[in-house]
Each structure stands twice: as structure tokens, then as C-alpha cells.
Image (cartoon, rainbow, N blue to C red; front, top):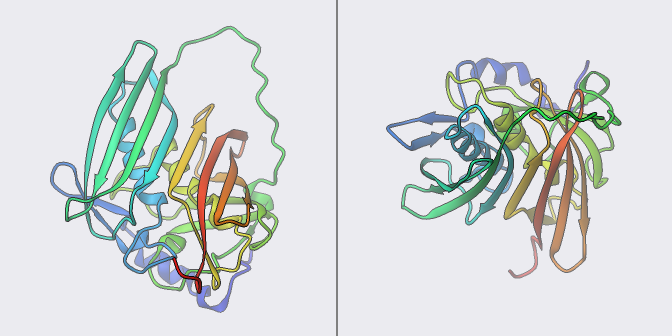
Length: 281
């Protein structure tokens, strides 16, 4: 399959060779993590895309559970731009029930400022004798999709270079697309990402792939991300049937139906702060 990408991305293979053995984060002592340049987002060369740190925190909260419980909801709030540097993660259980557990994670920058919070809800799984009719697959699969490059990233190390992107429907700027993403490198060096981590690192791109405003004129940052899952994702690819809607007064919503290759697995919602690049504030 030939990638439908601009010339700056013609040397993608070189990027893959450079990323051999690399990862989005490297764990230091205890709860300290060092972010790699592959976490870089589109809005500032000093700050991360929110997908990698969201996946990092969600994965560490998930690791607090025993095998009987599964995370079904993660609510992330980005309290300030997450820097590319050393981060400290605090995590705790705030609800410890027989069937429901809730965990809270807080991510701090090197100066001790809070940059992200995440609240995760987990439910104990049991066998229930019901006739389950899973939702049907109603979108193009990765094998039927076309390789695409994010139009607002350059060729330097970034989130876009570390993630593979396909479009099965729509195009950038249309506001309503079907995209597939998978990680080219691990979240943590030498550790296979969990299904939850693969979903979280992709789901924060719902607003990015369903953009409906020109990036040169507007920003549309999301201060939050809420993901709800009815079952774990299977395989490496995470699908996003994403739509962005705006009200014309600086607020928007990106609504993303999440998929694996079997079909729908859940939902992602992002609130958007929409601003003109030329207007004050």
C-alpha cells in the first residue's frame, strides 16, 4: 500500500530505523518517568501530545488491579501543557469495593506542578449467562484503509512519527472520518503495551483526525478526554470513527466511536477549546 503523504514523510523508513529500541517513555527511579521526543505534540516543540501521558497514567492505574478487575472508564484532565522532560506519577485507590474499584493518578512536572489527572473506574468481571449480540462492524478495516500523515507535524521526532495512521473514510478537514492508529514503538522501553494503553494513546487523536478548521488559523486543544470501554481492544490497531462539532463561541466536542478489527469497543469524548491564532486570548 502506498502512503498518501507529503514529501517530508517520504523517508519514514529512516525514522523507523532510528526508533529501533526506543519508546515514548523511560522509567527512572520509582515513580519518575522521562519523556522522549516521540511524545511531542503539534502545538509546541516543548510539550507532549496528550495521548502518551494519558496512556502512561492509565497503564499505571491498571497495574494496581488484580486479574479479576478490568478498567472500563478513564477520565483524563490536562491541567496544563505536559512538558517533554521528567515527570512524577502519584497513584492511589480511592474506592475499594467488591465489584467496583476506582483509582486516581496525578502527573507532575519537574517543578512539582500538576499537569494531568486521571480517574479510572474498574469493574470485577464475572460470567453472566446472557445472549450477547456484539455490535456489528460497520466501518472499513485497516486492510481496506489508506496510509495518511498528520498534516500539521513536521519530520522531526514526534507523536505523529511514532504512530501509524490510516484513513478508511473521510479526509483531513472534513470533520467526520474513520481512522486507524497503531504504535510504532512501545509506551515504555522493553514493555509490551496493554490493550488499555493502546486505546488511550490513540483516543486522544479523535479531535486531531476529525479537525474541521485550518490549523494555520486556529487551535483546538482538548483539556480533557473520557474513554469508556465495553470490552478490551484486540490487536494492535485502534479504530476511531471521529466527528468534531463546534458552536462558534470557542467551544467544541470531538465524539469518537472506538473500534478494533472485530467491531466497536467503546467511546471517547473530548471537550475542545477553540481559538483563533490571531485573536487576543
